Image (tube, rainbow, N blue to C red):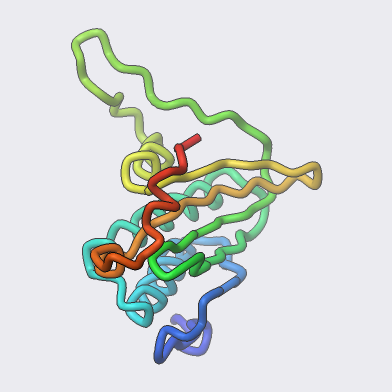
Length: 166
């Protein structure tokens, strides 16, 4: 049974950074999705964007459960009026991600089980990155925009649009 106190409350969107340890196990993705959903609701992120952020975060947490050692840290940051970043940090082997190769008949992706996590992030995020440090930790991060704020002329949305994905 889930502990309701494990989820922070964001009553007015005033908390700009959340940094939590995600327990490793079969409920890790559910924990992360609920945290993202609460954060996005408090920051008035539209439902479609929230759904995309939940999916991307869930995929990254699933990668940790499947491939990393120990728990993950999930950080959600408000970078500016319109831009947010999600980071998942875990101990694991360094790796270089490569997009799925195209098939000879023009199909865009293979149907290999368990191979969609980073491809989903690549498709949905404004920009994303993978980095490793010398202590054996890997961080996968992505940025997303609040489209309701981007519609305003004084937003800083051009900042993320200028970044290129890795």
